Length: 233
Image (cartoon, rainbow, N blue to C red):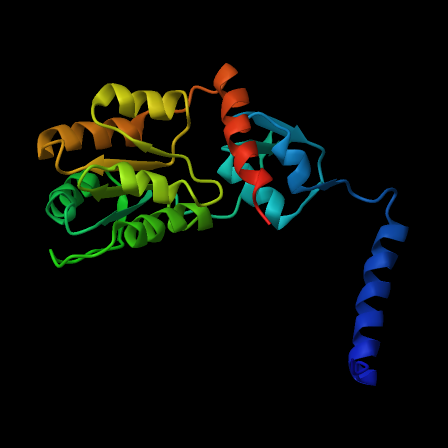
């Protein structure tokens, strides 16, 4: 391993010295909020943190994923943008027609769209498109995702392999409502061979507008997420 150049070493020492000096001159070092602490808080809760708290970037991300509202005293803490109001939409060849029918409807509801394909009826593999849409939710570039294939089952399985994704295959308004209210699902999968455009619109609207109930459901959703974290490297 090569040693850092004298100029680089001097710059690092200057930054460290300046930073430490700031804390020595302060009455007390500011508290730090990290991701591990945020993981212990209930999903959908509001947490008050001490004024001046340093919030790590990962802590902000986890708070947004868990829909936790942070406030400093009585003032809300600004969080990093997470694609709010953006819906990632994808389909395989079997769901292409329904995807195209749903696009104007979702826009009418007031959401921005990320069209992740496919863009024609040529045969493709549904896991590729389920992954493309769900990844936007996992990365925070989309708020929700909707994936359509022939039955909706395979895409649901594929999407649920991504960390932080809770995909639900819904076939009526009741399942869509339950997936959001009880399970805080963030990806919806639909079977184009099982439902028509009108029912699909009703399911999509219910999924996008139903709030997570929190409460006793938060504990259960926490356990779902904890299972996934056990297998992350």
